[in-house]
Image (cartoon, rainbow, N blue to C red; front, side, top):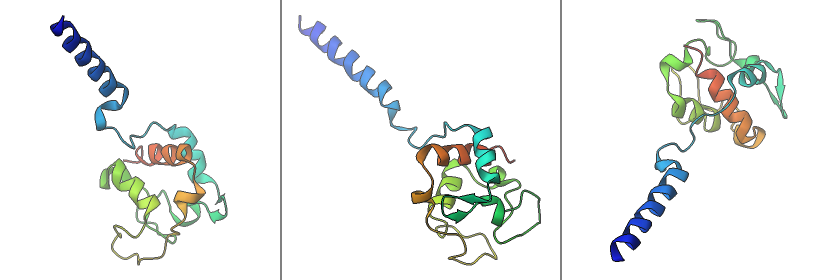
Length: 124
């Protein structure tokens, strides 16, 4: 009887961990890259200038911020997400703090953020 109870508790614990994702997938991108591409191309997002207004998709072309060409080769998902939400956390050489608005956590929904990150991860 005691073994049965321990077995049931073990199964319940295992199912709970699986349902929680095992603790290692927080923030994992599940966004639609095509929707993220469309979002990136919008000239205005919420009350701000859109991504394409300041970031080119052509290597070595600078508008206001760094080019996004090859961004997925220079940083992983966590880096890209942090760069959007906290742009001054890790600055790209030649781009001073305060250049990118610090409001994207408020302007973008979670779904939009995931879509944008998914798209940027395709830019290798």
